[in-house]
Image (cartoon, rainbow, N blue to C red; front, side):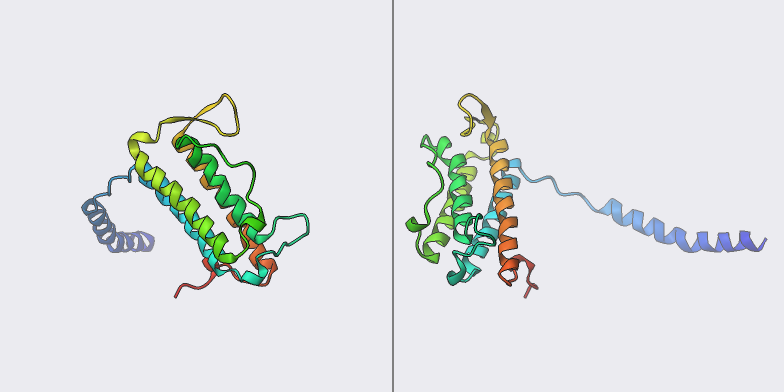
Length: 188
């Protein structure tokens, strides 16, 4: 009998709270999903923002730092990631893709590297905005293949992922150099 009374008591206490929570859920109207091109553009800009923040933050006197001799330097990693964006951008503009990564002696200062990183992501963002939702399924020739077509959106996601890989590598460069990456710092 005691167990039944306790169960009834608990049911009476919990029931109003459940009903209230269900009423609140009914009042919330979900937002419609973002447009596919906007989701893609946001992801492109986010990884660009992270790489730009690193490029601007890392000390210039450490720009040629390599965790091990066979790795690219910090600056070379940034130049590679930024240059790779043009494998996506250039074919859509009817231009040739870059012939390899830019050489460090082409971008001698931190300011030059930062400007190149910013420009590559700005150029990609402008292209994605121009294409909009209707252009996400446009076909393009895969720049790494002579005979494979790919959808613009699929190609863009691949280059976002590529930039994310290099962001992750540069986090390691920060840590090995005894520094804290901008995204890992406490927010102000």
